[in-house]
Amino acid sequence: MSSSSQLLETAVDQLATLPGIGRRTAMRMALDLLRREPHEVTRFSEAVRRLRDEVRYCTVCCNISDQPVCGICANPARDRSTVCVVEDIRDVIAIENTRQFKGLYHVLGGVISPMDGLGPDDLNTRQLFERVGRGDIVEVVLALGATLEGDTTGFYLHRKLKEQGVEVSQIARGISIGGELEQVDEVTLGRSIADRKPYEQGVRR
Amino acid sequence: MSSSSQLLETAVDQLATLPGIGRRTAMRMALDLLRREPHEVTRFSEAVRRLRDEVRYCTVCCNISDQPVCGICANPARDRSTVCVVEDIRDVIAIENTRQFKGLYHVLGGVISPMDGLGPDDLNTRQLFERVGRGDIVEVVLALGATLEGDTTGFYLHRKLKEQGVEVSQIARGISIGGELEQVDEVTLGRSIADRKPYEQGVRR
Image 1: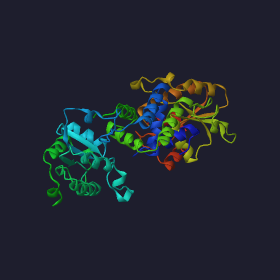
Image 2: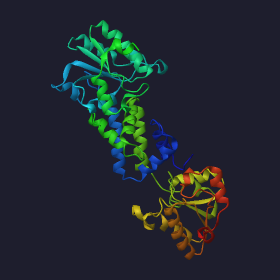
Image 3: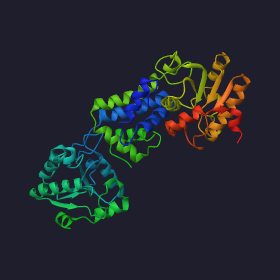
C-alpha cells in the first residue's frame, strides 16, 4: 500500500503503532482525520502529546494523577488501613465502579512477566513495601488478574509482605480463570472483593 | 468510567473519536502511549497534526499529494485520454496495486448520499467536468462501490458526462454487490477494470 503523500504515509505508520490497529484501519482513521476541521485535529494531537508530556503519578499509590497526591489518596473518608494492589489504572477504575471498596490502592504498573523481561524491580513494588513499612496498613488486598503472571506476582508479593507482618488477602476467584480484570462485569468484581479470603487459602487448590 | 486524571480523560475522549474505537479500546491505546518514550509520542502527535495542517491535494485529480501535481498526473507515461473516477484515495491505491490501469484518476472525495446531506456539489465534480471540458479525455471509467450511493453517483455522472460528449464506462460488476471497493482482492479488482463496459449496458439489469 503506497500513496502519493509522504505526510499520509507517516500518519498511517504512526496510527498503525496503536495496539490492535493494522494499516488498513490506520488508513481509515487517517482519512477520517483529513475530513475534520484543522482545529479539531490539533485538539486531538495536543491531547495525545500532553497526556505523555504532562502525565504525573500519585506519590502515594502510583495511580495516574494531575496532582501530586491523587483524589483517592487525598480523600479523608477512605479507609487508610486497607490497600488494594492492582496491575494498572484500568483496574482502579473498574473496582471504583463497583463501589465495594473503601480503602486505598497501589498501582504496580504491570505484573511480573519473565517472558517480557519484567521483574519485581520494574514494577512499583519498592513503593508498596515502603508504604507498608510505615505501619498504618493492616491488610493488603491482592486484586491481580487470574493469569500465570498475576499469580506469580501475587505469590511474590505475599511472601515479601508477610515478612513485613501485614495481612495479605486475595480477591475471590469468582472471576473466571484466565480472564483479565478489566473485562469482568461490575457485580462479579464487586462480589469477588467482598468474598476475599486469606492468601494461604486462596493458593491451596 | 472515570479516572483521577483530566489529561487521561481528555486523551481517551479524543482517541474514542476515531472511527470504530470505543472508550475501552481508547483507554487501552492511552495506556499504551503512556508506556512509550515522550519523544515517540511527540512523533505520533506531530504526524497526525501535520497530516491535517499541511495536507495538499493534486490540482488536477484531487488526489492527496505533497506536490501541487501528484506523481500519477505528473507521470508522462500515463495515458491522459482515460480518467478513472473513484470515491477516495484508498481506491486509487487499490487500483494502482492491480497494475491494470495506465490512465489518470479523479478523486471525488465521497459519493452522493442524501442521508448524509452530501450532494454533487459537495464532491469534486466541478473539477471533473472542467477536466473533461478541456477536450483531451476520451473515456471516463466509473470505479465506484457497488452500493446505492455509488450507483446514484455513477448515474448522475453518466448523465452529465454524456452531455459533454465523452465515453463513460463502468468497471465490471465482478465485484460483489454491496461491497466496498477497498475490500476487493487485487485479482478481482484488476479483472473488473479490464472487463469494463459501456455505462448503458451496466445499468440495464
